Length: 208
Image 1 (cartoon, rainbow, N blue to C red):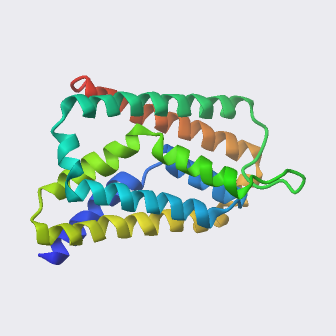
Image 2 (tube, rainbow, N blue to C red):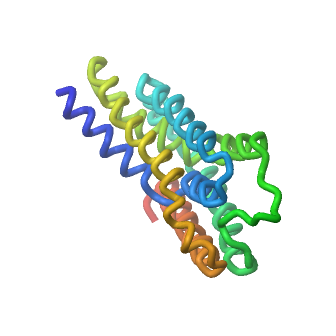
């Protein structure tokens, strides 16, 4: 039973986390620039620990049973993702930079990077839908002795994904020395952001 709920947590978390969302895009771009990636990965994982734990331990069921709050999160998340996608399309059309660090460019400070990571994580309502509502809603249906194994599964994937993405990005550096690759990535991120926003609005307004 422990292994079954653990694997359920792994699959649920993998399905939600392993996709190009705004947070993952930020981690990828920060990692490719080589700027404070340990702290970026740690903050993203720590936020997941907090939000998923709150969700599984009971807050998720409260959110899931409140249709108004869920819709507000959905609309807010769609607006955030729409804005993020718009900026990605704008960068894809106008930017001639690369994702790798320029020796002459001043790197972002640790404080700036930390604040940006918290912002991209906690100011996006879509994050709360994924962690507190969806993961928490599923976890809330489990018996008390199964919650911890489920939580261990979802958090293991979160840890492996963020640190794997952060430290694995270096293998993509040769590709992203080309400004065209940067523009293609920005365009792909924009498409994904708008697609997720569309799915959120479809959910909110009854399955368009």
